[in-house]
Image (cartoon, rainbow, N blue to C red; front, side):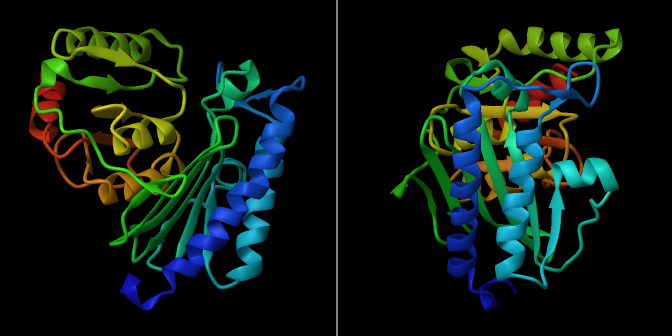
Length: 270
């Protein structure tokens, strides 16, 4: 079904939208921010809202009949239903806490689903000047150069990335720390960057070997990067080992060799 759509044209418009938002993020990055709290530690800024509006408007101008899901609009209006229609899924700033603190792992994430399947992804870090792109069946790229997942075959030699939770109740924090504690015995080391989209792109380009996260914000964190990983020869799936459901707030990813080992390790750390 996706092949009947002009995906190259869609990609060009999405890249343009990411660059427009990226300029706003780059300008605001070194300025004083006035974040609002969405929860005890989860933040949103005026830049998040402005960038989402810019991206939405740019895409809607080109594709007025497409559907749209965005982090801030979904948070405000609950517009997060995924249908079979072409649907743009947007995180205007993935890594808002990083943005507020001046930590440069910040990106715009723009994904497109058709028939509920991710078919196109753009993840742009304007602070570090890195643009990840992927289109179903056409490969994955970083700043225009092809990328591929790592060739690591040993779990004990793998670099795993995960994230903590924005919840600060004891059961939530304990679940995260206990899982990480058990996994540390099985992998070389664990990282947290503060941006799930960039975590997944790190697996796609071979900087990282494994990723998992349970309980993240929504489909805008994974819709774009899921395409990029798959096109780079990696795998993206549910932490149980089943197929990825981008609406489930559960994701795992690996290079092409370590999926089974990661799934087994996650079962042992539950």
